[in-house]
Amino acid sequence: MLRGNKWRVHGVVLTAALAIGSGVAAAAPAFATDNMDCNWLGFNCRAFWDHGYGSSNVWSNYKHLDNKHAASSFGNTPEGVRRKSDSGCKPASSWANSKLEGVTSKREVYYRSC
Image (cartoon, rainbow, N blue to C red; front, side):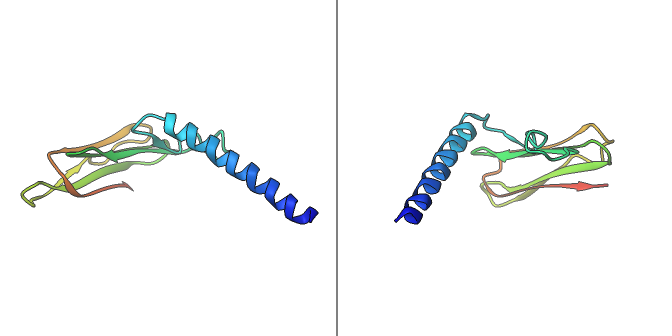
């Protein structure tokens, strides 16, 4: 009986932690940047990636602190035409920005080292 209650308590704590985490995530801006809080989580942050899409756009913005890098975005127009945006190689510690407007399907985002 005690063991069952112990597991129930852990489940409640886990559920509460997930609910709190969900609330924090919901309060984040619509364009959250990956790895932004990695120092807080105990990781060594060396790169950041801001990416996403809206109803008719897509973007990929990438920054690496030590290496040359680039970002690219792909998507299809309503007519089915495939489009691409590429930032080209950027120096370390600068943002590589890629954005497409007028794309509504098959949107993809990438980053890479140069």
